[in-house]
Amino acid sequence: MAQPEYVQGTLDVLTSASTGPRDELPLHDTTFVVVDLETTGGAPDGGGITEIGAVKVRGGEELGVLATLVNPGTPIPPFITVLTGITQAMLLPAPPIEQVLPSFLEFIRDSVLVAHNAPYDVGFLKAACARHGYPWPNPRVLDTAALARRVLTRDEVPNRKLATLAGYFRTPRQPTHRALDDAQATVDVLHGLIGRLGGHRVHTLGDTIEFAKAVSPAQRRKRHLAEGLPRVPGVYIFRAADDRPLYVGTSVDVATRVRSYFTAAEKRARISEMIAAAERVEAVECAHALEAEVRELRMIAAHAPPYNRRSKYPQRVVWLKLTAEAYPRLSMVKAIGGGDEAYLGPFTSRRAAELAAAAVHDALPLRQCTHRLSTRTTLPACALAELGRCAAPCEHRVSVAEYERRAVAAFRRATVDDPRAVVDPLLARIETLAAGRRYEEAAVVRGRLAALLRAAVRMQRLLGLARIAELSAARRTPDGGWELVVVRHGRLAGAGLAPRGVPPRATLDTVKATAETVRPGHGPVPNATAEESERILSWLERPDTRLVELSEPWASPVRGAARFRDLLVKAERASSAELPPERL
Image (cartoon, rainbow, N blue to C red; front, side):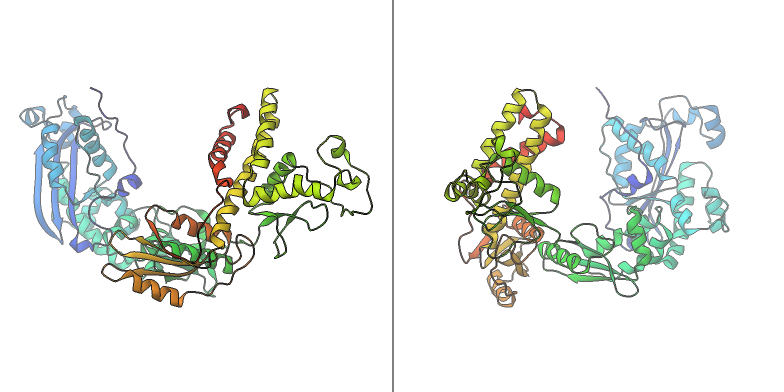
């Protein structure tokens, strides 16, 4: 039977375990199991352990001891016998590791595992568990060698060997290269190191484990900025000395998220630069995660913090709209007005808008010239008319009514209702090109189709929400409470939380009474950014969200763009995987 493969982890991997005591547990209340192994040397392969020594302590008090020799089933190298004093004769009556592991795993249950050079000892133990079919409990791990590198300077100790540290702290028990003696010496060293942590503002288990990692001096110096923050959903703002917002973020647990910026897990160069410039962290408590996400978007848009990358300039969008003239054409604009009736967007980039416009021009006989055409005079036709890709309204070859029916009405219907008039010609063109093995050209058309469908699906979803004057909804929380929202014309107007035992209806009435007044507007995003409305839609569309009240029906076109969602997904996957267009 094949044995599970074991790969030895680094210290960062070992200390990222999620089981065991909580991060906020004070050190004096934390149960530690200090372990040391003697081995035959070599790499951890599931065997090689000759002795285990473990000491369980809490608050400076010894709670238990586990010590046993282990028969590795292989000869002991002579140099190991010289180093440890353990002979082959001593190990012959000892139990094998598979008999020792159950007792050891029970001994370390619900404790923090401590070792000197922890990756070595933990590596052997994990390999043994993997080889003999025991699940590794994945405890929190603290390495006294790594902790000593952060606490003690080179002027204090020349190296971080266990014997050196034991001598520095003048521990009553010294290491002897025997497992129990070394574990007991490590206990004394651990207590000595913990005594030095107070000066570094480290008092909890989570802080200690993070402090032992490779945290930059700036992170260590600024970690006090995370103190006193609430453990609730909200928005956090890193501010400079002049109170400028440097960075805005959101989390369901503000305190935990902000603390993570001062740990070794945070390796982004720009965030390190931001931390060095930050002088304080401000928290805005929110009722739930949706309110926090929306507030974050609004704050980023309002202040454009230099260290935020996403959502800084929501106003930088473009639209495609039909011009108001006898023979309309597609125009790319930065905003739409109340008089605009046929449009598509918003697009977050000009490139996306250009692709969608090209899709429309491939499917519909909309003119592409930029002249303002008159119904009285004519202009010479361009090459597109000769190629049959334009109805040549410039020469009055098509009437205003016919142009309206064939091009304008088809575009208007495709954006707000059924886009089949655009989708079918594009699919037919892709099929023709693929049949002729013109795959690159077919892929270009496929990209245009995807851009058009993506924009149409998005706009129709946004329009459905923007038309509703007021919508209230609720969602259960894991502890039995209710998250409440009030949405008006696509904008989050109010948010609240009804804790367990509090009538949610009364809380919702209060939220509605104090909610923001939002007036109707034109288009799919009249009062909020598209990103905000999409966050709201994602929350509303969850299976566990309940609609409480709506001022009018929330509806989408029966034959709208959403029915091509599978086609859109397939086109996007094909583009990312570079599949041949005939497989679309």
